[in-house]
Length: 479
Image (cartoon, rainbow, N blue to C red; front, side):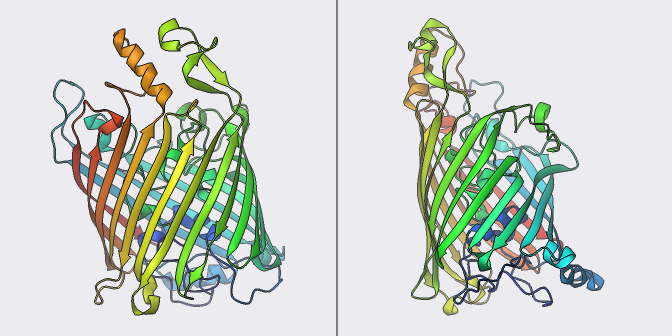
């Protein structure tokens, strides 16, 4: 899925020839973080060959498309460099729930600058089909949701995980593409959520229950999601033009989102490896009526890292009553069904315009997860205004159900006047987030998106006021 409407067949508008000056139109689908998703979600061409070669790298529209001929010179030699910035602002319209001294009405700003370096070693050294991919980021700022007591979903998804350093390594891996794209093998420092449970469409929104990936997918602290990575290997095969099957092995590393272990992302010694995550995903990516792209995915993951039970202690009794250590599970699982489909084309789909619907359901092992399941639905309308074909309206709604063991344990802890987990100040049961936005294509390489967010039952709690936020997201593709 090229994000949203940007999903075309292999070799079409999004991926352009290295020697061509025109680039794919700049929309929020095209940020650097979506590069791996795009490789997953691009079907084979109508007449694929069996030639082993490196697929062309993405080249989104940029402010400086080819400064002094440098970009074209580099790409002709197999080097593709991208530089972008994403900034997200959110401010609370409503006052926080009274009685909590740490909560306040306020605003926040968070952002990320990112650099992507893709290298085609077929051009550089004659190694057929082999390429390397590396992404680094720097992140700054904070997020507004904690000001009103929500620790489940960020108001600014780009907040956190970047290590609080100038340069944080997100991923660095090699990939071999065989048989005209029918087989792709990759290994190195990789993010599981960039290949699995992935879509470039999600970050047409800002809130963390949707952007990046539906939050249920990263409920475990061992799940590597951008900008965190682990040692991993992944194999993907395409048995037909519009289908794929992929499987990976991602080593479960303790502390991948914490500074003590992965502040810079360059800690490679593996001393914190405690298990594995093995995801499997099948995808169908049809072009309905020949011009309406869709993406349908079903998958699951088995995790062998030790994970605490949300209710039982080591003897199978409620840990909240016995005050004993929680039972540790040697394995847990998750599953997902994700779908998106363009249902209307404007101007025959020119400029990737049209209406795309997204919906999905994710389920986690209720014994070991905070979020038992999440359902979401969204609509993205690009090009509804003929004079502005790249402007986009987005609407999204997510619903998250908290695991029953968490709810019961918190009830027992509250009855004893003891502190509860997950920063809870009330019983966590379920929560929802709604977002409406309008992305304006300001100029070549620049998107500005005013937005509205509404948090229902923040942190999953009924004792906290619903929160309304106004804000904006901007994306600038410099190179």
